[in-house]
Amino acid sequence: MQEIIIIGIGQCGINIGLEFIKQLNYDHCLNSHQEIIDQNRYKKKINVFYNENSRQQFIPRCLFLDLEPSQIDKLLIQKDVLIDPNCCFSMNFGSNNIFAIGKYTKGQELMEQCKHVLNNYFEKSDNLQGIMMFFSTGGGSGSGIANNLIFYFHEKDLTKIVHCNPVFQYGITQNYLEIYNTAFILQPMTEIVDLVTVFDNVGLQSICTINGISQNYENYNKIISESLIQTTASYRFPGFLNGGMKKLQLNLIPFPRLHFFQPSYMIINQSNWSITNILKTQYKLCSFEDNLQNEYTSYQIQLRGNCFEMPESQSLLIKKEDLYQFIGHDTHYRVHTSVQHRDHENIVGFLGNSNGFKNYIQCYSDNFAKMFRKKAYVHLYSSVGMDEMEFTEAETNINDLISEYEPFIHSCCHSDYDYGEEEEF
Image (cartoon, rainbow, N blue to C red; front, top):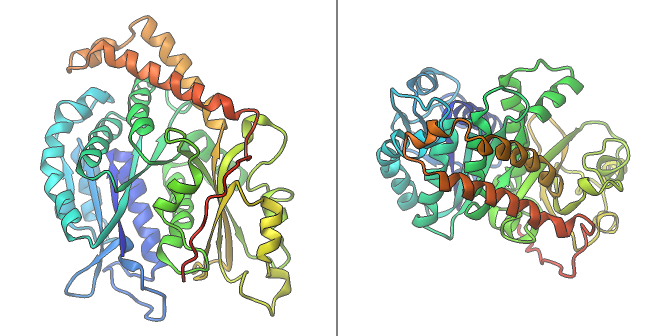
């Protein structure tokens, strides 16, 4: 079994991690006591995110960290999910939104406290696949502690996949320290992390507005979690093409540092739909227009439901050869999950490696340069132990990443190589 560890860091990461576990529970038919309530539900791969104890309870394999106690206290008293309190760590300090505190001082102390839990997960897992981390790039706790964890896993075992799910907050808050914090955490996310699924508060706000949903963090967390439930469905349930972290890494990353993905998904409950309408024409799950900044170097189509296996329902039947003809053989990766979501008959998801990320981080680069040129707020970091050279390195790293996207601006979704796929049953 290819197990995965869930790690939530800081207020943002803890809330998203908890919501993700709630939706995993619902998808696997687990109640608030982590017991299976539907024995007919497919549960062969339930141990991907859970450890089963002697009481036949499936306890989520997770770790939650924060420099403030309030969020951990709320986590422990909530009744929706059973969380092992030995996997929750906090300090009565806070980061004051300063990356250096999360990395060098209190964050290091917290890391020493939680290492035994991580070591225990490594030792007890039969075949650990990787780690999924949730945090905010702008927070001091989230970015600083995430930096330490990334280096810890890098030194612990290079064969394990580190999948970060950061939330960028550019344009939402007026805290200028978030520019620095994001630049600092982008450096290890670019150089060490294997996979990054990018979420942005501005984009989440737009989704809520379009769908008539209230704009609040609770709904943002649900949208993020629903997207990840779709991405991980092929890890947890069978299909004619199963997915995994290593397959994502193999098929969607043209060069090691270009591993920042943008997710999307569409719930399909009507009877007359086609893959062409979903991807391009009617719903525009992804954009293939002639806008160069929206082109994808690679992408994954995620299909969940029985649409491939329902010959009695011709309107829902998608022929594999038609799908291949529309998308092409050399630019995408396909996964399928036959076990339907409990609430929806069919879901089509998309995970794209887009050049649009270049323009996004260009905004951070420009603002970082303006602030650092004036040495604005640098003393807050240097007083905790950071050197100004680290600012220079972070700025250089962002500019290097931007330049690496340049060759793909005019030629995307064209490859001379066809990455083979292994069919699993």
